[in-house]
Image (tube, one colour):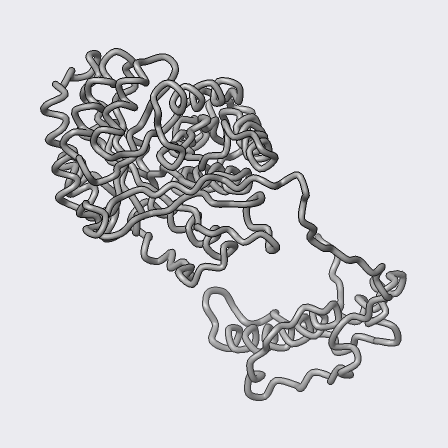
Length: 441
């Protein structure tokens, strides 16, 4: 049988501890319960007795918590319960010895003399388009969230939409299942319910290995999304280097004047054709490379020198290796790019975009549990997946990322709340997680 410990014995337990707030304190008021003779099953007398004694215990332990500086509110004691001994106000909070003084200050770095290029996305009626707002990214003069170098523009989030029903993690799919057959309705839900700053339409059905949808038909999907929402949009292909230039050029044509973000120009496809269409029809270009700063410099240089793309129409995507896929490498790459830009490398002084949805490719974000029997419990994937995406996004926000391509509405809400709070935006409202219950979390 386990050894019984009386409340008074706790005085002896604490006597050898160097706790100033317990010096000279004696704990009294032992409690004994005589349960013999009460019979089996539910007994009202036993229930009443236990309730009264538990109330007294709560008072004792609440006062103990107060001695350690933890405030605990206690309701009125039960009728007839003995009053607990009062504790001196001097003992209500712990006393600490003086701490070593510390000072943290911010200083301007003389090396950070080159600002990041500011790039607008989306044309309103005043700009010749039909978007309800224009998004601005870039413009920083330091690493993110430095109080002595205020960011001129907050981080923006664009939520993904696909032109066909695809396989998604359960935590994501249950938010969109009823709209996945209609890109327009999907986009509308992202804006109206999930507060997307932008929409990214991915024309994945155009891949010859998927549906091989003709560029002309894919362009109709772009028109559908443009009519469904009035936020700026990004237009992505399927990733097929042979088909994408044709698809993106046609999409740029039907979206003429809207200043969309054409995603993407890369070194392994006809980037010149994409750049030409972007300039002809008034769009921005997403310059995409794979985790290599020198490749990023090369592509940016070619877009500017060979294709004559203005600096205020280029946004970089250095690739997001998400949590579980080498996040430290992606973080380091983005941070190096931003530092080089601030120190004057004009081939890198552009805003950055992150494919934060890559977090959902890591098995830890969507699998029910670990495939290894000896592994620890991973926890519920309904929470784990969104957290995976949030950690990926927040990490890269600190590295200097400006635009986030995301999927899960809770991930979007949390990332926007934290980054806008750090930014100091009045738009940063408290997160109402209850709004997402039943919608993925």
